[in-house]
Image 1 (cartoon, rainbow, N blue to C red):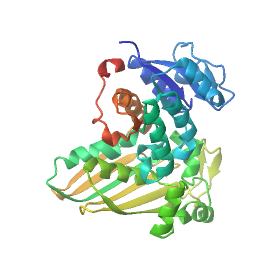
Image 2 (cartoon, rainbow, N blue to C red):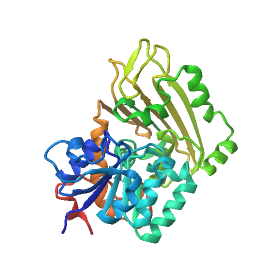
Image 3 (cartoon, rainbow, N blue to C red):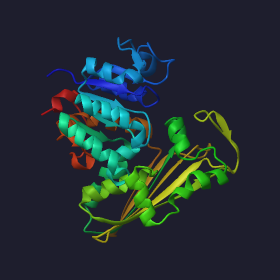
Length: 357
């Protein structure tokens, strides 16, 4: 088979790994796009390291023309965290019939937070015969890992999860979305107030495509879908995280003052018709010197099971997941298809093209 041709949309921190992993899994980059004019015209090796690849970074304003000419099999989108922010990239791919996979956290299961845009993309992708999806760290560590453990459980009453990550690792858009650097008063007004609404008001905002979901909002939807559960009620609460001393943030380009918001903790509670409750928390913040990534989940029932992963390499795991997912996306039915409808992810021992059907 021929090598899988990949376009990289967004040449920031995540692409350092996604592009290298693409080559090391026997595929190739045929186009690279970004918004930073300082990167335009530079070889992708400037970002990913190693020898020059002969692929220059182009202005994403010209994405449609460049992708039309490059004819990639799939596009990796590593830019923003909300579906509305990556919609244009997805839409261009869908129009051209190019498969796309994104690290956008909301894209992991966007139909429960922005059904309007999800349905638009789904219809367009079906018309052109391509597949769009979201994946990354949550695909395994908040998703398939949990459902696989559920397969070893006789009865489940509750699934409780908590995961923390350093916003410094993911860029300024994510850090700002977590309220990092805001005063507590600003955080309450700009972040927390969004969730102090009635269920009816929240659904109204969701239907308008204006909701700001925490990552676990979409994860709980994914889990319910994968486990065949019917959601009856879901709520979200966000609270600021703080640190007792000043913290320098290279991503924000500022010093987060002691007592100000370093980020946030978002807790999503989901009730299902089948009686299983999800209570999941994601903590994204500027880390202090004594803090590290941690992923902890407990399945309550018969029996109880807890899994704890300390200091996971979240960025690298995210990027490896996306690259390993490429064959599944290409093999999938067309539309906006969450990975909950795809096979459990596997390690790729062969070149990616050898897994295509």
